[in-house]
Length: 85
Image 1: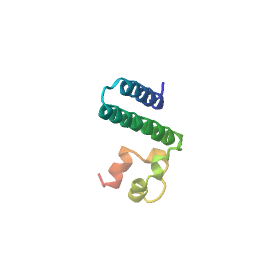
Image 2: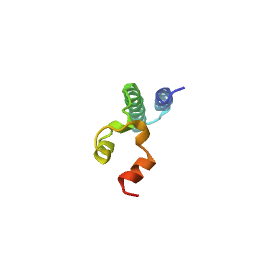
Image 3: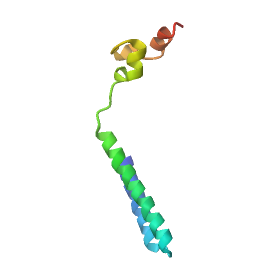
Image 4: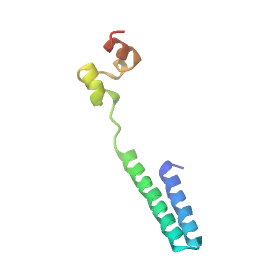
């Protein structure tokens, strides 16, 4: 089961708790909390759908190494060379 499904199940459990709550304030708070879990599930799903950038494309890597470097060059040895160690 993925993170998104876990988040949605947590939201469903909180909605069940909200139905059992005895005060209107508790119900509102629990429903808001369930909403936050659903928002997290949606955000996590959108993020998972985005293509992941290669480390060489990160702005700090480009700044440090001057342009796009092959993956094998980006790592601890390359960082030590860039720092002059």
